[in-house]
Every structure is written in structure tokens, then in C-alpha cells.
Image (cartoon, rainbow, N blue to C red; front, top):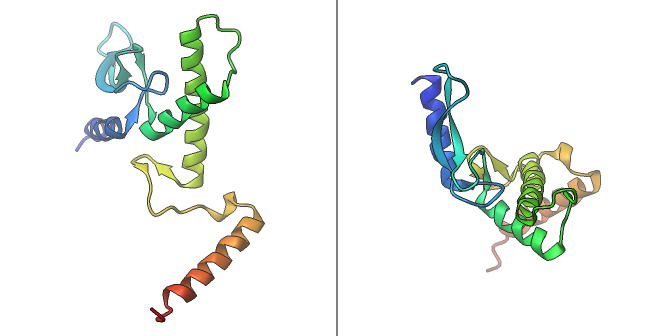
Amino acid sequence: MTEQMNRIEYLRQRKQHCCCKYCGGLLEIRRVAFSEQDDARVELYCPRCGKIEFGVEKEIYAVTEYFVEEMGFQCYTDIENPILQKQMNIAKVAEIISWGFVNLGYCDENGFRYPLTIPDALLHEELNLKRDKWQAYKEVHDNDDTD
């Protein structure tokens, strides 16, 4: 299988669990020409926004939209169009949450991961100690045959 075919299959899978980070719309796979030459790439695209968009997990978009609306989050005060302003705020917060989830091990290129694995380097020393104590407690009580 060629690299282009692998990319297309990856994008097909990604569009199933991701949406546009600006509007929450469904993503499509499109061949996008970047010049008048035959130099075209296959990309995820949001037809509602008219943008090439890699997307975010649908669940992340949902909590991000809620957060921006409920908390009145505003980091683009220089944008006068309220619809565009809201989209940009949602996209920014979605990027931040996605980054955090990926770096904590909650998400990868295939979506949310289960069971969760959190790299020790990302946790504070105190959290590592508490997690270790919890694992030890759980092992003792999971093997307890007092039922």
C-alpha cells in the first residue's frame, strides 16, 4: 500500500471520531489543489467553514463549546464579528484541551484511549506516590476472597 493510500485510510478513520474545531461540523475528505500544477493533496475539510481542518475529538469540541459559552471565555477581543469570535475562541480552547489530552495519554491518533496510561514524567511526584498507593491498595483488595 502506498503512503498516499495509508494517509487516505487514516483520514477516513479520523473523520469518524473528529469534527471541525471551529464549528463542530462534520469533516469530509477532499483533494485540495495548492497551485495550478497537478500538485494536490488529500486533506480533511470542513464544508461549513470552507477550511482545511484536521479536527478535534467530538467530545472535546462539545465540552469546549460549553466552556466558552458558560464561562464567557474570550481571548480574541480584537475580532468584531461575534460568530467568528466565538469560533476562534472555541478552536483555541479545543487545541489546548486536545494538547493536554494527548500529552496525558488520554488521546492518540485513533481517538480516546482506554485503559488510560499517563506517563510518570507528566505527573507531579506527589501524584505518582498517591497513584502507587492506590495501585497497591487495589491489588490487595482485588485479590481479597472475602465475598
